[in-house]
Amino acid sequence: MGSNPAAPILRFWFNEVMPFPLAVNARISIPESAVETRFVRSSGPGGQSVNKVASKVQMWIDLDRLVGATPGDLALIRMKLATRLDAAGRLMVSSQTTREQGRNLAEAAVRAADLIRSALIRMKLATRLDAAGRLMVSSQTTREQGRNLAEAAVRAADLIRAALIRPKVRRATRPTGASKERRLEEKRRRAGKLRHRHIDPE
Image (cartoon, rainbow, N blue to C red; front, side, top):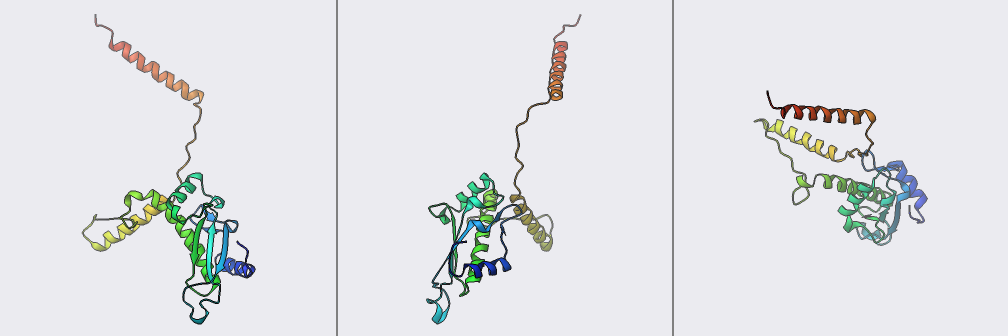
């Protein structure tokens, strides 16, 4: 994390409450080495102390250091979060909801993870999102509102879960000797059928 006078204390507090690496989903996480922070004076709530304490946290996430992210994942994240990236391509997040540096730090980290998670989900569910970016699901399998509501909720969870699954990479392989022989045998069999069709009856 970025250097500041309270860094050792904040790192201890942050790791106690929300230890690194911070999970984005089942396979992608944010390691501590990807995070840089800076504290500045907050303009949020605080009464007389509002302009005296540097409690607002500014956080930058180096996306290239995300653990478990594929090049495809990074491309999706950068495309969906383009307006939140700085000139170096880092994700920028801030928090000033409280006067406590530790809480603002944790909130900024959670917000960063949520943004990355949302970027990955939204791309895969783009055709199911409304103008406000909300996932749309419906159910009318029964005449009971309660059962349709439950089914719609389960369907929404299934869609989100499926969107988070990384598809298997298909690797080109050379055909085996047995597969070549099967292909040639099938060609010979089809050729034999065609020859029999063209034989004139006596």
